[in-house]
Length: 267
Image (cartoon, rainbow, N blue to C red; front, side):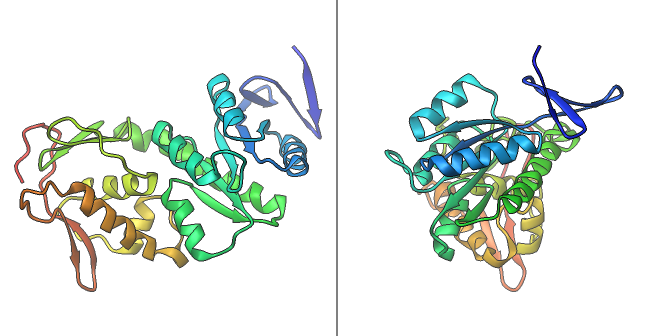
């Protein structure tokens, strides 16, 4: 087995970082997707220096190959790529996986940032950026992800039913009464889980931010309104059903349906 040394730490090309004989912590495997070779190489050197395992890809084709070959813990994804752009890759990746995504882009418009978050990105960093800022954001996202993988998720019901809908939390899927899968972005799914886990209870925007683990940051909290609007459209069955998610003036939002672990749930 080949060991490498970084400062006072040593690690190997597996899944653990050995700190001493009594302590081991997971070593995250980061996938950097960027068509700029200089940025790929810089980030690979920088992240390896800080104890991460790193794989790089130049485009979507190489990204999917890496994801099929390795257990990736976080994807750093550039927006402007040859072939499928970063937003398309982000949306497609989020539909198949809950792996955290941090997007990089030359664009710094608020609208672009919101779109990236709504496509399922966990965070967003405009170029040029300080690698240390990216590192700090990566650590925050990974901490949040590891926390979600822990006891809180284990204690959740795996499936919840409301007004004919089936919400599979563990598999991150929403099914209609006739078994159709509903396409939800990561942000939409997290908001729906927050509402379904607190039925018939008014949740403010701040509470929704907390319950979704800060996926949408405070300066952009109006993105919650946009995602709620999209959720309403996707939950509408076109048969005159009452609105499942209602706005409470000056308060926030409320899921009006009853929720149960039993498939036979009355509205």
